[in-house]
Image (cartoon, rainbow, N blue to C red):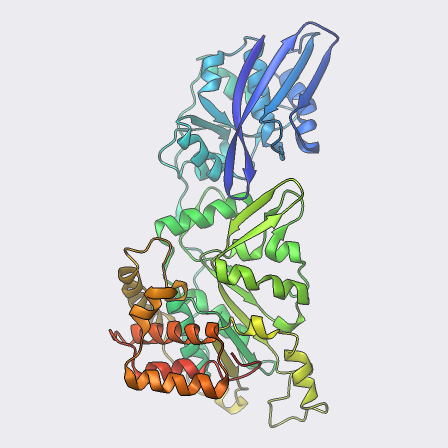
Length: 504
């Protein structure tokens, strides 16, 4: 007796179809799983055996072989429990084989037959839709998978419900998508007193997704400013929300099947490992840069991160994706994020504070910020000094603009960019521009070109730095609703490249 069921194996955000073949043949009693399973998949036979016993179904005294095809694809995770159980039940002719073959199943079995939630329900639903099959998953994962409207999602709480569905006793009703949430309310930019230049840079960064580095003494407001950036960004579009949710689904970060329109804001500690930041570890899971896809990655105490971790950021910043290489696989994750970094000017933090004396100046600052390499510093479009705010000013009433006011300007600038890139798939913001498109949309007039030439010669700008200035100037012009990039836009863009650190 031979039967088949279908499930998926995850390679990054891609869900690859896996055929679960089950053969029940004469021979010595044995239950084996082959096809490159990991430890969790190999242990599925014990969970399946116990779950069937809870339903008073005893395995026959025969040789049971489960093959996971293709055999050379690594199989990881407990979500193989349910498809293995379905293939076995079909091979025993307890449920109809053709019904099982029309579904893609995933779910972890408890010993009493309950179905436990698993990660990856959303990408699995997309894979099922492409194969024109229904998706069978645990009830706790149904709301998440149902966001893929092109597939019928059947969510069951236990193996008993699955059995009753396939035997026609009590068919499962299709699951409904979870709620769209806006997430917690962002903090208001009006709460930040002073720091007008840093606020302006934050607005430019939000409008064009330009990477930004803030340097200032401890307590000057760097983290406070970064925490208010999500309130300036427009909500995720439907395609962006789906992209982001697929990554969060693989990381198990989707709560109760709800999808958020709020852009991610990730702030890992500076002791985080390379696998935690870039991705990797067991199963090559997505790292913080991928979890921040379409959102913000805030790295506080930037020079304190391990040097190899910082240098690994250089390529993902440029390409918008990261490849986690392993001996048997290369896993690709998207990671188009807005990098906001914060650093003290030196180890003690008070090199730039005129009210305090740094005993090791200026070598203290050179050694500390020198941990940020020139090529990495060159990738920051905006470099801003955040000076300390006098305590007398903290008692003054807040007079700055609110996040809603600034967000309206950012949204208008983003709308201009969406119109500009309507015929250029893959481009969404000014930071993505390059080549001929950058020349066509950001080339300044004769006066601006002469100014930019002088700036490049005087400050030794690299080709990357030159182009990044053009992108920032284009964003500043969009915030001004200007069709052309003029001298004031270029001057402001250049000013953000010359504040600190290695020039470029």
